[in-house]
Image (cartoon, rainbow, N blue to C red; front, top):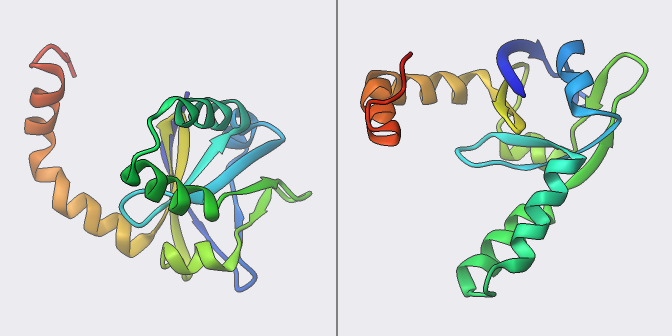
Length: 144
């Protein structure tokens, strides 16, 4: 399971260090693409294959086609360099507004890479409703 919050800097070439613990969980090859809410999503290969298989089962409605065009057009298979960095393609850097300070979070089946500004805005917009969100999702059966 991918979890935790980590702060790292992206350099001018789009290289971002991924913490060792997360590198182990991702494996040697993984896929990066546009995520939801202005972040990037990084999937281990096995999870990526599960997503593609689910996609193949969906009816090819306009919404499905449009979502997958956006989702798949930016997808790229990556590997770590010798220093544990990934080289994020420039269109993805621009999409997520990654400038220097980045937040990497584990979200169970994937990593998300956020600009510090986008992450802080997300937290500010959602932290106040965290309890209400938990109640609606788990019908108050989540004991946290």
